[in-house]
Image 1 (cartoon, rainbow, N blue to C red):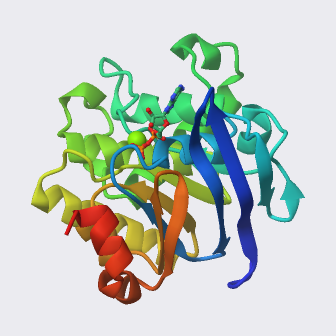
Image 2: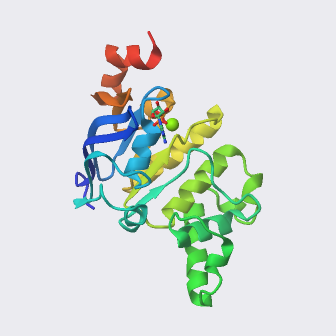
Length: 253
Ligand code: ADP
Ligand code: MG
């Protein structure tokens, strides 16, 4: 899609759990080729929002449009089919399988859970194509030298990048990352930052839900800040940094 095209448009999104409103009227727009960060303190509703945007949860109210298509009543598989690829806050890899196999299997399953047996039964040509693509995606994110190592032997930072490669293997329209910087060491965050910048340069559209304010500040084009389920600010990172409401809510100052 051309730069500036709306990829993900969200309006008045509401999600209630019993008496608690976890997401309360959130809206924003993510345009092609940009990285949008959604930040907020613990309990702000970030994971719930993420689950709504990937079809894991269905909103009580509001609109989600993906490339102009109405998605808010659609099941998870429909989101994947339309090009939403995601990573998980808690790494979801088969540690005993190789790096390459993790990407190949993940790509084939398009985000669904399943076993390696899912790619058995493909003909050799299909299987070869899936593995060739997996290799390309791993090289793209700088993991080309680890293809045959067990995924579980990689450092956490590399595992997160591996998950990104797996998401990329599905050739997504938009990449959604759930707290990608959580638990990473400084140099791992730098590496992740590099990978995401490179993907943006290639034209990828990315949404990052993140607790780590410092990580997103230097990376994203635009930030949405949520607190108690509501959007309390939106703007350029430098605007958000200066915003006293954000400082109050987020930093407790
Ligand atoms: P964050 O990811 O920003 O920490 P969450 O989206 O996980 O916030 O949670 C927002 C609020 O919704 C919290 O008060 C949390 O306890 C509540 N919540 C989240 N998921 C559920 C659920 N499945 N059932 C009930 N309450 C939930
Ligand atoms: Mg969360």
